[in-house]
Image (cartoon, rainbow, N blue to C red; front, side, top):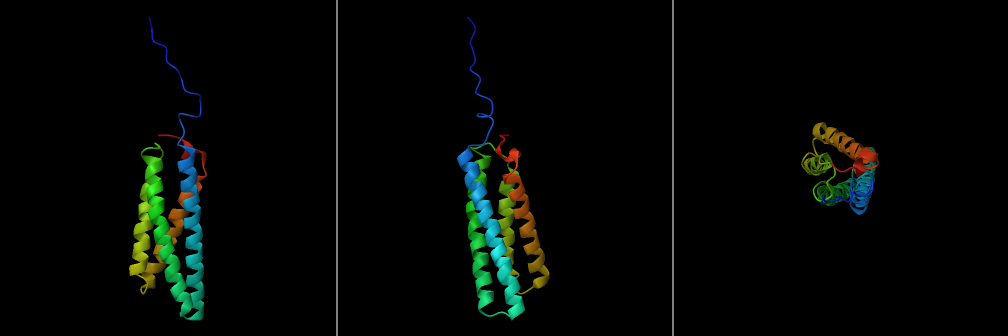
Length: 139
């Protein structure tokens, strides 16, 4: 006698778990918001000549750094057990590393500003990917 195979319903077995992807999307949005706030405080600090706004820029940068840690963990969970895409893990690690470089290069605007642009490029790519249909597909 032959064995019968039970085929899973279309769309359920081939998708990343919704809770993981939804959590990653929320953290990516939080990361984008934190980057916008940090950039806003940077612009205000430059216009005002430093002072308290510089301190708020540094604090916002620390929030960006902490959110990047959470984002790395969630991206790994989407990738490995969730069987999703792997490149968001490396983009999240890059966000963390470039964020660390921002803390080191804060006096050298020749490196600090391009790193900030790189942060926005990375988070933009992650935002676009996380809301695309390909984010939910398993690999």
